[in-house]
Image (cartoon, rainbow, N blue to C red):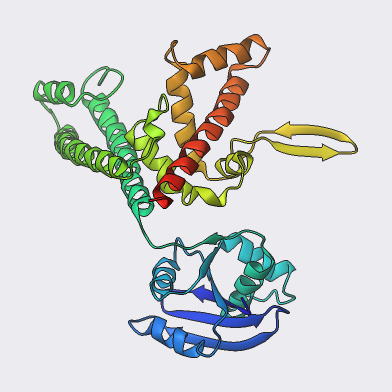
Length: 344
């Protein structure tokens, strides 16, 4: 790599800056977003063979551009927006917010950062991430509709629906209600519409769950062999972990999942605190697996959890320890799966 090309992507335009190893600007270009955006960038960079592209938020705003560059045979790095922002303020000497300065900060961040993720062509990892994100969005929307249905039925029937929403129970309650004023009629109508929408949403979620199961099976992962990891949790772990080989040790993966405690030291006093960093979706997936193991007395996680309690840890601390342990197990499975696929 002789030069680093930083790209600041936007909806209407992309700004690119080419820097050498000494962080001196060689070229700069701004192209409009369109069918010729990649060809224009490649023509602009023509003549520099040993080049690497650094795209800000290659998994977000810069996804399409980065995928097009990879398809053209280019090497592309993913620069997180937070890292580029910090470099712009602290590392480039140009703190003013502008597209050229942003592109320069992206390139500088790529030159200085020790290990940025290399953008790869979309594969089963991307498919799993898309499927589980859609499924989780459906689940959140269903919870919201259930809360609205609870409130409406509670305003029509004394006591409302007991505990979780059961659609048949809700429909039976509403059939017995005879609204006596205009407000009650409107509440009744909205509640019936919510039940119809929830029934349709349940069908969509069953189809979504089936597609996730098929995608996870097609990836030939061994994650489902872990107690408490079903197809949906496995899809979350595959989709949001990305390329597992970029984590050289299980500790690095634990830091990425937010299951490794953060060291805090001051004046020679060293303590460890709960990490709020890392990928929270992966942390959530590991939490689901940990709770599932704890609920089953015959699981290995429950024995580990009980041992931590006998050592004097609180239930929350024991769960965190179990999640850290599960993170190592998941990392080993992910790496083994990736190496097995690469060996074919």
